[in-house]
Length: 351
Ligand SMILES: Cc1cc2ncn([C@H]3O[C@H](COP(=O)(O)O)[C@@H](O)[C@H]3O)c2cc1C
Ligand SMILES: O=C(O)c1cccnc1
Image (cartoon, rainbow, N blue to C red; front, side):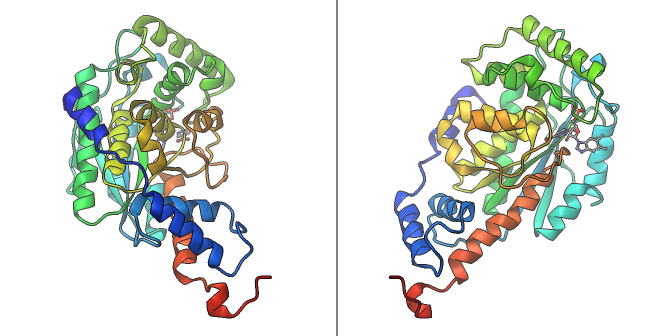
């Protein structure tokens, strides 16, 4: 993908359908409940109407896209787990045994697992192989990847959404696997959201406080050596981001371009959403927060993007686990629109 094609993709993202939002609002107010009493479910129903142009769209074909990649910065000792876990977990996703698979089955969601940059040769009939390179470089010594590689990963994500949308998928979610990726995400938060380093860097897979302080220093060094330009989100993504994060930027922009809702998972996925929102503010109305992660910077990150989480379950796993749980709440909002009686049909007085 060239920068020109990225700006073309961004140019195809249209505002939400205002008439459909107004029609949804009128319908919600005609249902047998005090106005607004279903709270955020009503907001979700209105947003879905604006995105799809339908009052109660059939969103039963949904996919969680799990982008997997490795991080050169793992050499600095920033995670509680070894880098090989990334590839090993990809095989676990493909055989259906990871947390995201279990929760996706409950929500009727397909798990599409993409190797966008795993540092291992993986083979499996269900694996979607889109490797841009075998892991990023160590960002404390130079850029994590080139601008061109970041663009290729974005293109892979948006093309996959195009393919799935053509096959009838109408709702997407972001998931990821990449040991070390909370370090890259913290760097993105610090640069693009202007967060203090000590606030941006959390415990990831469960490092102790000493190791977290070391991780703060690693992120400080990565930013100092690369000098990412915060006015140029692609520069920041390439220098201190990750291949799976770039792939998810493509998924988010691709979903918006296809007029499909895209649910954003935890801390890493939200870092991708931040980059996508900075690249294309018009993509924001297509995004929905899913859960609030226990990773310390997540609430500040969501605020900086301007999206709200639906659920608070103290989870801090990633993979797309918060998204697949949140699909149930989108289903609830759509069911309300489709099935609830109106004051008129049920013969209930209003005044
Ligand atoms: C077995 C296992 C399964 C996971 N699934 C998601 N993650 C999560 O942990 C990683 C980020 O944390 P850090 O930056 O501290 O390495 C990512 O791969 C993320 O998706 C996992 C981590 C492990 C160990
Ligand atoms: O919120 C997340 O996505 C997250 C947090 C910690 C570790 N892995 C993922």
